Length: 219
Image (tube, rainbow, N blue to C red; front, side, top):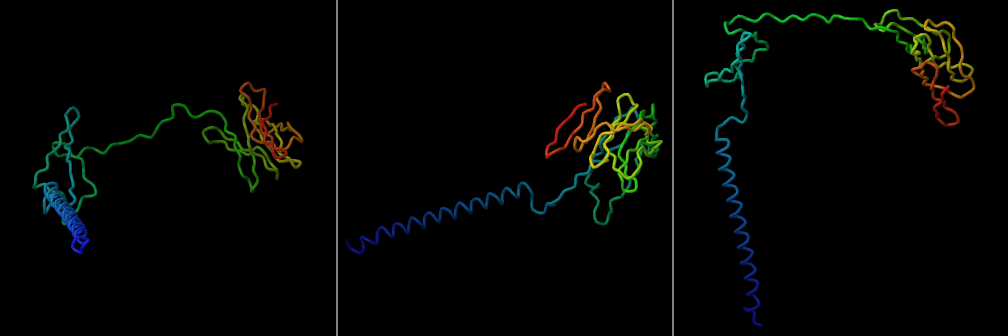
């Protein structure tokens, strides 16, 4: 094979590569031209990049329908030399301002009823406290330096069951609604918590933590 014959395929390859490159350049030019044309149609040269749309409402009297005022070219949006007012009075069609609305505070038809028992911290010690449902008559029910918490009131409204830390364990205790008549209900069962009294007033469910186990008990 002569040198002329061997160089023929190379020359054809170069021509093909050049033709492909020319086609790519033409396609890119067409895309750029189309993009420029679309941009001119969608956002004409010189148009604002940000447009404010302002709708002005005319307030109507009761019984009349409110209308939307049309903005004319002369009514352009406020410029830097025209500061936007912070407040604007609401005017009637006749030009007089509407009177300011007045609001009346809510009136209790019937105040909350019942008693709320809760845990309160007195001198850094958790105690059992109580108050009326409207927040009045707050009082402390337990005393001393031992912690008392998790109170629950009986459905009958006469007893409070709670947890207190005495004798090295958390046990259940019961007392009257005024804090009198306290008595211990459990002993040496482990650490007890979260007591709840049944709706029929004759059962108590509570949690027992002992030997790395948490269980629900009923009594």
